[in-house]
Image (spheres, rainbow, N blue to C red):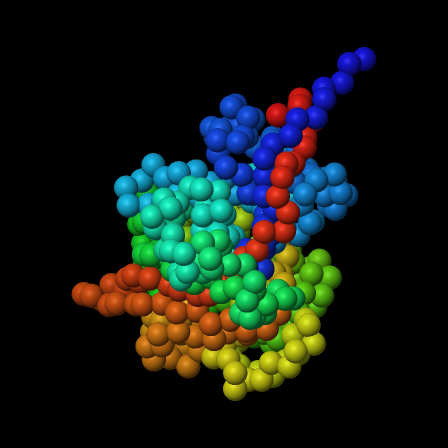
Length: 397
């Protein structure tokens, strides 16, 4: 019986922020995978090692967590005044599904370095020393991201002394700006930063109760609830939540009912099938706690505590897109996040997450009673881990 040989595809394995993913240039993909569709999805799932009923992704590049089951496709931009188009695919671990509905804020920090190193940014725009500004079109959510990438002796600088909680080693700082991060999508749930029309709602969830919630479309659709209302302190680490199947089910139910309330789905069943969006996060006032690395976080160091769910599990740090939602909501008086953070009009907030702390800023403007956010910003780091080719069976897609 003949067997299909393996093919090899140029690829780069990169860390961006607290995530890792396999990066491809669009032109390097096999021709039938250069366009959206099942062939592309099948190829990316096979690269990552999904679907895997063992949930380990042993036969692929995935790391068996939502933070490491990611793919990125980059190409020269088709949009005016942009350098590259960036498409993000969140690969499900145990089911045959690639979610294209949202962005990965962490991997956004690696797109600029990858684009420069791959020759996709005009050489005239890359200084010999200094910061290169890369204009990125995020194709999933149709938004602009600006990355400021450090350059030393004409090459992307990857090493440095910038420390990011959730990442073991220091690296070079990459500043990223999410321009006009609020959703302007079409259809239900689109066109409004607060799709329910309210800064805070009473969210009714059967068998859970009625929760105060802020539901916002910024960075990524996110449902914020009070940690206290769902029985948490906000200081929890992964094992306190991820080892509790009943708690995970409750949080997923909150996410699904919030998704329908936001107009992202018509039915609960639809929301349960797509875990990437929206996110659900619980917030609490500042408190002392010990992070997952053993680092002591003092209440005085932070404005609030946030724990966020990603693909059905408590995230080990914080998703970049959720950080944008946190910064945006914190900047707007009347939201749950703003109230927990102490109110006022903060230009930035520092929040505590399971791995430590993170600062995120947002520029919020109120006009005629309507809030808009022009920009959210944060610093991350990125590094190439491996480059060359990935190999998959030729009949896998």
